[in-house]
View 1 (tube, one colour):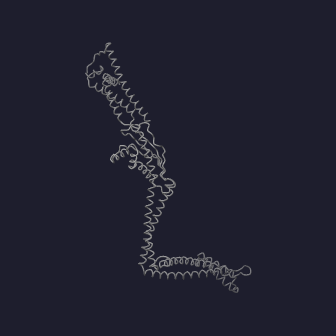
View 2: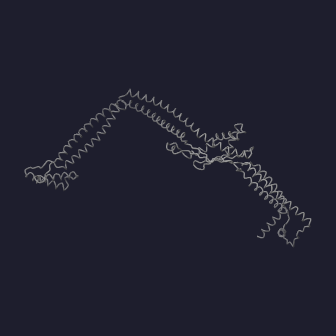
View 3: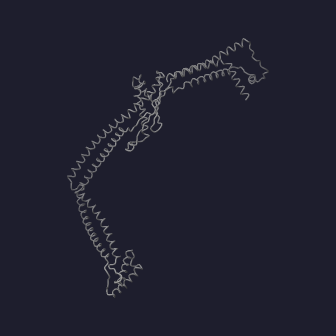
Length: 505
């Protein structure tokens, strides 16, 4: 720790002994640095924020809205396009000295580097422009930055509100022309189809034609087959109900005995068969044996059969009606099958006519589909144009107007001036220290001992006369004046800088 302290003392002593060299070097570095800082032109920045609502609820509802990222990128490219930047150059002071196309390209390229468009949110954009061209005063550069931003906003508003409508009108005109061409082709195809159908009316699809009759017969046959299945099911259901319904019933009191028991047993047998029991089932076998015994007993009672069952008679009537309907449907099916066979034979006699008819109809259908699609697209575009015209699908609003720069955005001249002073002081001290290291003089006895390896017996203190002391203090005052002058020059430069900023504001 002692050696470090001693080395610091030695270094400071060497610098102090060569203070005039350090002061001269500091002045030289500071003057050169301040001159360089003074030549750097001030750059002024103007900012503005705009709100661009790319679509609204109605636009999304009718299918106008698109990809939001693509629309946001389109807004940024529109603001900084070469065409728009050229308009900005011509409308501002930047175009005063532009006299050729090459100069215009250079001005546009330089302006593109000094403009930034930042998307802060989905619909919020910040436009910033920098101006620091030579040949203009600071006030003119500040006003130029504001004019650039304002002109960009004006151009964007004009192109999106007026140019977009003109583009929509051109698109609708192109769609109308395409629709007219497709309509002519469609009318020609329709006339060709009508002429062919008139010449071959008997073989053409449609009402009264061979194909129409064949399709009608096949459709009717499918309906008859469906009705036939329903009729067969209905007859089977009636037969099941008849098997479970006794032909006669026995009333209690006056009629009974073996005949009543026989009728009841027969009804039970019918119910078992309706449930799906076969003749080999034990209950069915036992009931049949009981019916045989009851039949003998009923014969011994004089053949009394009981009262006719009205439900059985009603079911017999319904069965006869449904069987008649079944026979009629079977007859109609046979007739339709014969008719279809006859029509099919006639159709195969002219296969070329049917193929030609299919080709003509296919061409007509393709043209009709294209025409309908173009018509739907034209109506959608027309509706979109009305939305953009009446509701302003691209809504534009200036949130923050272009700011008027009050101070340069770059460079930070006060900080640079102070930094130059610090660098100058460091350079002066460094030069004085380096000069001290090059000369073989020693500031302390310890340094001399380390350098020679011999013990130093003692040292002699510097003693100055009155005249020498007076001369020393006079030189010290001059040195202090030189240092103070350096600080004074810095203060003057800072004051001039802030005064210039006040004049711009």
